[in-house]
Image (cartoon, rainbow, N blue to C red; front, side, top):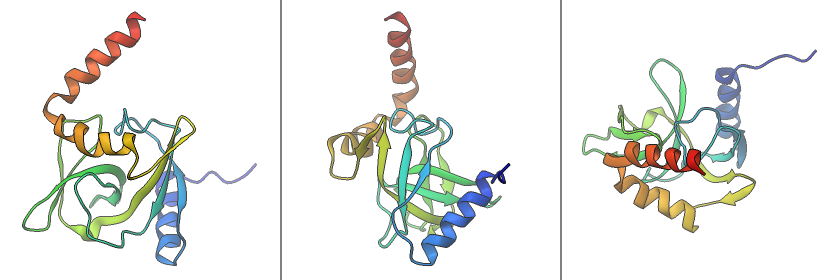
Length: 150
């Protein structure tokens, strides 16, 4: 039987490959914090961030405890700290600075369809969905009610 690699080790390896010059590395999405844009089982393509992070970017970052997180950048503060949140969340997380960033999502495969910056779906979630941050939970609740009634 093959060796089982935990998520932490896997993402450490992915980040090291990116630092060594590899590009367009694909990883599976786990968890539900980026729903409805990304679901567990979708795939994202990662690259090193070669420009300053911007509002709406989906970024792979590492918390101070070492855990990797894939969330969207809500805002960069004047002091350089960053406000992050998953698309399914209203809770905001403050990232101390860009030194915690490991990669940027350059495209995604959701339900087998490629989605990339410049596309309609990407634009909606990077702009409109972020604007709806204060009411996301209500919208998600309503969406779930509709799905269950059909």
